[in-house]
Image (cartoon, rainbow, N blue to C red; front, side):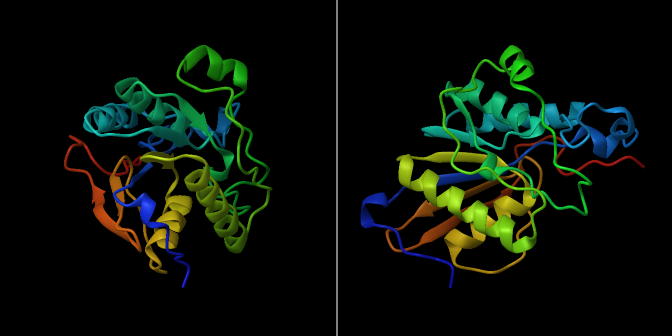
Amino acid sequence: MLFKPVSHSAWGRKLWFVRHGNRLDFVQPAWFTTALYPYDPPLCPAGHHQAQELGDRLAPETIHHIFTSPFLRTIQTGHYCAQRLNLPLRLEPGLGEWQNPHWMTRPPLTHPKAFLRQNFIHIDWRYQEKYLPDYPENAAQVQRRTIQTLKQLLKSYSGNLLLIGHKIPLGICLNYLLGTDQTISPDVCALNQLVNLGDRWLWQRQNETHFLTDPGVKVAP
């Protein structure tokens, strides 16, 4: 069993897990062939709209910290949330995409800091990352680094956390905390919320998308 009980002092703590909005390369596959950072696609227009609606949905919630994968689509998604919640955005590589060699033929090059500094004012550049993934990663490696990252974040930061990432790492996080080994596939910008009950975590919101006018992954015909 993966689950390890947490202390009673964490009673009522809430964790939010959100996958990024829809990707540009899903709706414009040709983008990949000419992109400078082909493994770091931005959101498509529909993805930006999903992320805006996500930020609006989370605005009234009590969230104390936001952590996001350092890939552009997650940063863009987190940017809308940081704006609405008035919180810094902390980039954590340990929450990044699975560096699967079947998906990526070389280590994924992400957009440089100069570009991010110019476009995303909410990023906290003082934050020290917890984990740096290695390329290539197999299934056991991505599971290990994701769980290690999650444990470090829970230990280092109190209060309610919002984690914005990718389908596989988010599924690993949810399985670890719930003590399960099921196939969990978060939809884009869907809400998954866990609440701590002292000796276990309750999956209070599961893949909620009712606040999105155009939910789901969109792909080119």
